[in-house]
Length: 156
Image: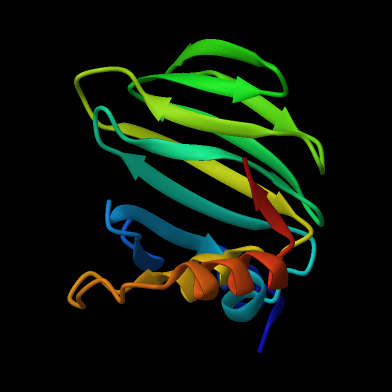
């Protein structure tokens, strides 16, 4: 394999990625760059879509830093004890152990990019999600708690 072939394996086209629907809300998460597929130990890159009125509960990561870039829509972003109105173009750096969450406060789809460092947290979405053609698996509270502990994520 030549160097150009190696580099091209690190690209992810708009239609590429491993798509999962999360929870009963069936929020769409696409794993774009990850440890398993692209061999990146340093970072993983994902996108997520949140429908109006829905959101990601406030939580914190015990093993990763996270970067968020709002691509479209409007929302309310929780970072630590503060809340911020955000829209397309906003970027957040979330240190390990800092509470954060995001709610779509607009009337259109809110889309954003998540980057985790180090890579590995993308497997959390594989664990809790289902492929678009599959029904929600109905995790019990105990199953959620076990997965959360394994990935060192805590929800308020």
